[in-house]
Amino acid sequence: MRILRGVLVAGTATLCLLTGTTTAALAEPVPVTGTSVAPLADQVLTWTANDSMTEYASAPATAVAGAATIVFENSTATGNTTAMTHTLTFDTTTPGYNHDVDVNITASPLDSQGGRHEVQATLTPGKYRYYCAMPGHTMSGELIVTEGGGQQDTTPPEVTATVDGNTDGDGNYIGTATVTLAATDDSSGVDTVEYTLDDDNYRPYDGPITITAPGAHNVHYRATDKAGNAAEPKTLVVTVVQPDNDTTPPVATATVAGDRNDSGNYAGSATVTLAATDSGSGVATIEYTVDGSGFRTYSQPVVLSQTGTHTLTYRATDKAGNTSQPKSLTVVVDPLGDVVAPYVTADLSGEVNTQGSYVGKATLTLAATDTESGVASIEYDLDGAGFVRYGQPVTLTAVGTHMLHYRATDRAGNASAVQMLSFTIAEAGDVTAPVVSVQLAGAQNWSWDFVGPVTVTLSATDEASGVSRIQYSVDGSAFTRYTKPFVIDHVGTHTIRYKATDEAGNTSATASVTFTVAAATGPSHQAPHPNAADQRMV
Image 1 (cartoon, rainbow, N blue to C red):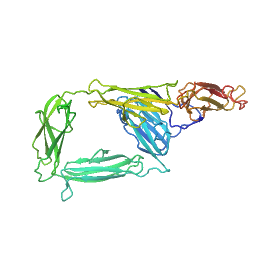
Image 2: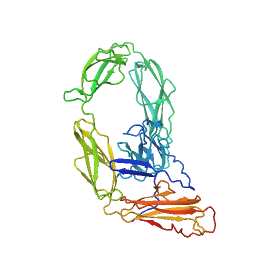
Image 3: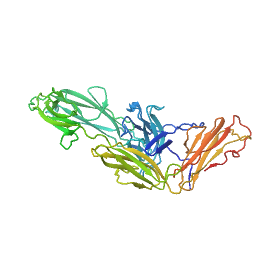
Image 4: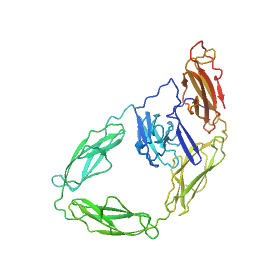
């Protein structure tokens, strides 16, 4: 026998999963007077989402054990310009991860909170897996939690700068200087690295800084860790001088990338990338022309998508004014072939109980069609174990709730978007719902009305698979997960509805109890309320 009484969870959620579809919603907490809202935890972990369906815009990698405020924001401020809905869901079933935090937040720029939501959680040492429980999304990651030991990160990161380039006898850089920044933090980890170049405007560092203008340049740089500690800014002076005797032109090169057909031509398009090197004064510009048009400055790869034969001519000039001899290459682009990904479906078969769970086992069948090049492969991933190739129907017997991801690829290399399917396998034979009961405690008058606060306690038992959760509703509000006794203390007549679900997915019928909190105190006794002493429902 397993009894569930007051299990602490970090947020409440209802996850409705049907074959081939996934929906999720964060249940609103039931308003209960006489209680106070817990303050935000000192440790704040923030996830953000934008227009991407394959990765979160940002996510924490590490945390320390203990209380934490989990923030999930999917708003216009985080880069969501399409009003796309995302979720942040903590995995509570996959082996190898912590399962003691139950978070499932749905956020959209159009929701009542503008896409920003917070819940409180208590983290334990180990590893948590999180993902987006929405159809077509492949966003997931891991959060590593270490022992906190009561120590907070108060030490800022270490940030360093290195300069590369050819120097003269005075240490000046000839033609070009490249500044590379790096930062380390042994505690919470580096959050940002920033710099300024000859001004006071700090900007994010995202790669080496190239300085070509002659003269002395001031580079200020700093770093901040994930605990908010900022390193003191450092200053680097870099002097660039113009070379005196560079007479050698740069060396320019070109590479072509793209899918090639059986004729060796590029299917649909070809991308030409140009580069140049100069050991003297350094490269100043790269130029190119396509099919006899005028030379233009190269700044990014050139995409040739028009069907036919193309001639691209290119050259480079260094800072001393030396220009290389033009070179040419010929690229043939053929019409594009198959660009449509396969259509893939998943089907589950087996005996289903009244709660929609498969009894004992389920058989998974995947199928895909492609009207162009044909299907090359079908793959699936069960509960985060990694994608494997599908060959024939698979019989699944592990009891519990499972998450299936599946996809297909055609012979032209087009891959379908990853689809998701959630389902539950119940123990064979367990078709009985839990027994759930309610107890009301508080002082009552001779009319059996309560004359003060009423403490409501819910409990449930299940002889077979065990209780999974208890849910309740106060005065018609949305059902929420029961974790511990709660208090009703405002005057009036109240109705509590409640139900329980076992590990096999069987849910009891909804029961209810109605009681009145009187406006005035009077003679009282502690005998059980005649309608609520032992409300039991199977």
